[in-house]
Length: 245
Image (cartoon, rainbow, N blue to C red; front, side, top):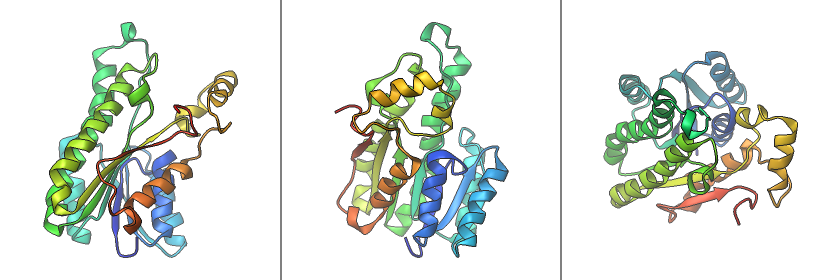
């Protein structure tokens, strides 16, 4: 990752934080995107810079087109390029479908899927000009398996798979690789709110017998960004401890 510039959306916590930190330790210049938690984003930046790396925090609500365009313009002005885009930011509004409001549906689709689309649209001209780049979309096993009470989240993550494969066909000829990583049960804020009995039930479903760690996902993302993955394109990699064998 030496001399590479990487943008991680939702990089202030959870999986995004782990990706940003690993990228920083591998020599990348990291742009840590956040929407509201500036302190957490600046803490990630501090950890990277204290270790001798380079990083900056940039606020943008990826559900807002103007915010996204402003962020990418700032990246272009500051660095002149963007080598890797990791679309990680996401939210949940879990309810049974009969109780889902239009706002519950729209907010999750607009952030989790629409936000990735906006970032891909904004980065495409930069990467096309460079004639190289890597895009990694963070999906979820819920996007393929579904889950009761998560129709909006599941639909958004399933859409990310379609977006990944379509962009892979569009951009591959210009040496821009596009892949997706679909985590299973990962020990993040989203799973830490579960009751102890719910966590235990989740762990029992995983053949490896544990929840995943954000670093488990970050390591796969880092591989996809590396020269070792130069011929991996349009692929969806599941990282779930064997949950859906």
